[in-house]
Image (cartoon, rainbow, N blue to C red; front, top):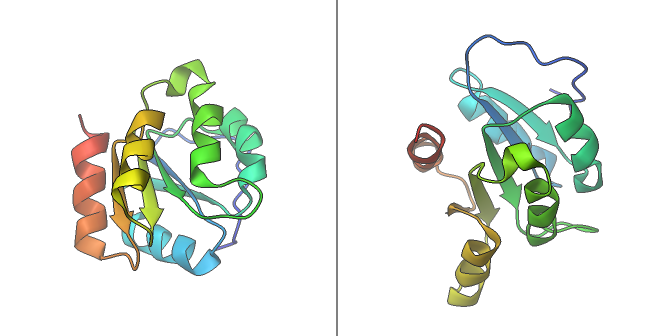
Length: 134
């Protein structure tokens, strides 16, 4: 798996699509490995390329790292929400930082949940399933 996957055409095989954005390739490999059997999983290590990626795919759910250089997960929320088709798309933060302030800001920006790193496979699948299949 490449660290950043560029898609020219999205196939329609009936599976729901997840876009995971994290500057850590190992996290993206983990997410891809854990979810690839049930979902179409696309990954992006460069958050500045989000708009380009959204021109090519239409995710049913976003997984966003909170802490990244250049653009963090909170910076990406207005970009995602600027696409009319993603006004209500579920966003789950991947983070090692959790506090009441973090949670409150994430909710105000439109996130539906968060997952604490290191990622626990069952928790990741459970949270995604609960939000993506609503």
